[in-house]
Image 1: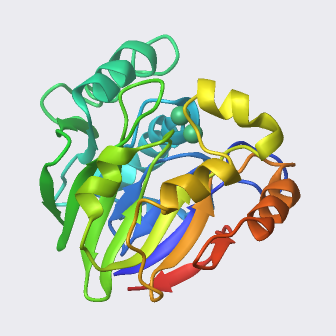
Image 2: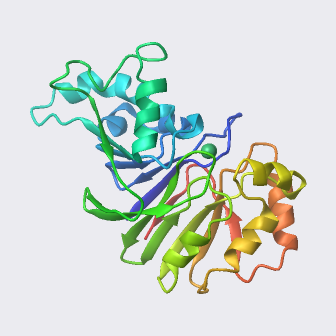
Amino acid sequence: MNLRVLGCSGSIALDNRTTCFQLDERILVDAGTGVGDLTLDEMAGIDHILLSHSHLDHVLGIPLLADSVMQHRLSRPDFRPIQVHGLPETLEALRAHLFNNIIWPDFTRLPSRERPIIELVPFQIGERLELAGLTIEVLPAHHTVPACGFGVDTPSGWWIYTGDTGPNPALWERLRGRAIAQLVIETAFSDEERALAEISRHLSPSMLAEELEQLDLDCDTSIAITHVKPGEMAAVTGQLAELDIRVPVFALTRGERYRF
Ligand SMILES: [Zn+2]
Ligand SMILES: [Zn+2]
C-alpha cells in the first residue's frame, strides 16, 4: 500500500495542513485541508473517503472536493458517486451541519437525487471494509464526539491511524499480538497543556508514553505522531525526547510518502 501524507497538523498555518492521508490512488482517510494538495485529476480519482469523526479539521475538504470534481466525474461513462464512509453519528452531522443548503449545497442530492456526487455509507466499530483492493478495519477511539481510528492490512503488517483520541485502552486490546508496520498516533498538545488535552480527549507526550506502555511494540514498528498544533511542534518533540519511550517516535511531515 502506498501512503501519502497530505495533512498531519492539528490546525492551519503556512505549510500546515489538517489531517488527510491518501491510501493508494482511490482512498482518503479524513479530508482536512490537505485535500487541497491533490491535483484536480488526483481528486477526481478519489472513490472513497473514510472519516474518523465529524470535527471540521477532518471533514472540511469533502464539500469543496465534491464541488471541484463533480463535472469531471459526471462526464465519465462509468460514473459512480464518491462514497463517504463514517459512523452513523458522523454522517448525520455532515447532513445536519455541512450539506444543509446553508453552509454548503446538499451534494448528497446533487446534481440529482437519483445520481448524486456524494453517497454517505455508514460503518460500525469493528467492521472490516473491503475498498479498492484494501482491507480496512474500523478501530475504537475515545474523543468528545463519536470517533474511530482505522487499521489497514498491508504486506508489511498493519498500518494503524488512531484518529483523534484520548487514552484508548480498547484500541490496545484490539491490537494485541498484531504485527504493526506503522502506528500513526495523535499527540495534539504539549505537556504544558495536558489538562486541556484531557478535557478535549487528545494526547500530550506524557500521555502518549502511557499509551505506548500498553502495546507490545516490536522494534520494527515505526511510531509517528500526528495532529500536533502549529506552534507546538518544538515543545512536543522536545518533551518526547526527554521521555523514556522504548521505541523511536518521530513526527509525520506533510508530503511524505511511504510504502507498506
Ligand atoms: Zn477532533
Ligand atoms: Zn482533529
